[in-house]
Length: 95
Image 1: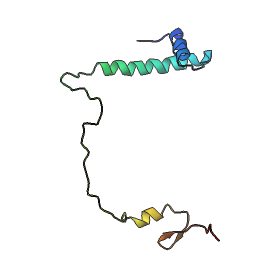
Image 2: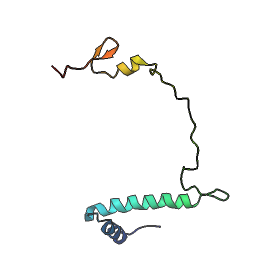
Image 3: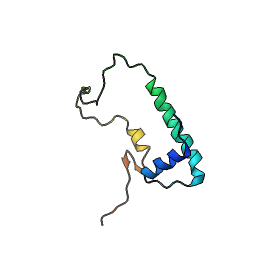
Image 4: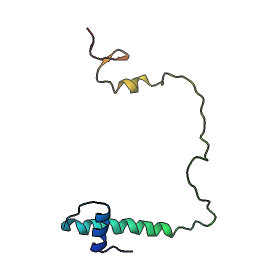
């Protein structure tokens, strides 16, 4: 399927997007590219594939709820703008 400039103008009007005449060819090419991808998706064989409405039926893997210190203090402190030994150094804000 290929869109003509009149259809692109109509789509822009329905979307309430102002499109200048000099922008029409670029927008037309982009929309035609998107429609090309949709046409490719329609060619995929989905016989025997159950429709999936969402991930709600999928159970998440659980991990042990254990408190740790992260184990990588040097990597975390590498992001600090200033350090005081093994801690973040911050300016004093309360007198």
